[in-house]
Length: 242
Ligand code: ATP
Image 1: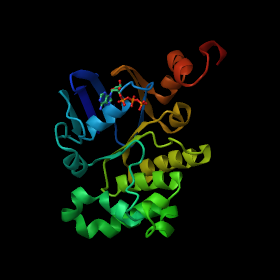
Image 2: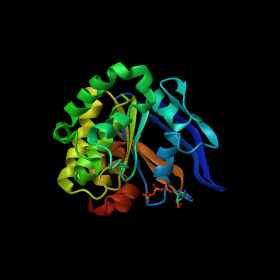
Image 3: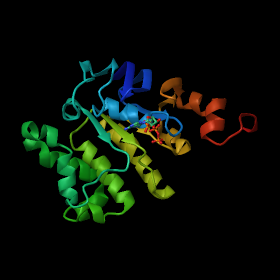
């Protein structure tokens, strides 16, 4: 379980996140919904140790991970698939994947091939590209590579920041279906930030709505999907026309 309590983040002197409480239970896909600038990426980056919170705690399976640097957070079992994929275009696909277990590499060197096999079973389309440069893959393949790299450390929880950005609807569906497989077959918890809220809610168990750095609403997929505020702001449905 991931438990986030009273989390605050400042960037410079400006407070971006205010008193965030969220939890992700084992086997759940949780979505964070919010308008541009609401603080979704800041939240994921704070959980991943890229920003140091100014208050609050993050506990992953009974271990405090808030305040740790990013490479230690990965080693504790939280992996971030960043916005824009951040593939190393001049490295091969295999090298990009191996970087995903860098923070655990010395301890788990013997598991490298095991992890690679597990990730390639999840993304068979990457197999034929292993020696190709990451930068030569299509957008969809790069997103698969970014998720695969995130899974290489065998995380307890994986955070995805806008995985559908710039991709065709068919590829977006494939990615969301993969998240279901990750949840079912690997038992990994997932936090998903997605502009395409309608698509995201199809694979989500629970969701939190973030507004100006504060959680203003939370509930099950059914509760969030039928909430009038969410329907009009994020699903393009007028509440009385549903
Ligand atoms: P989007 O959907 O556009 O990615 P978001 O919900 O992910 O938005 P954030 O990127 O977390 O929002 O940004 C939240 C707020 O923090 C915004 O007002 C943004 O301008 C501000 N912010 C984020 N990063 C920085 C930074 N490095 N310096 C200054 N302000 C920042």
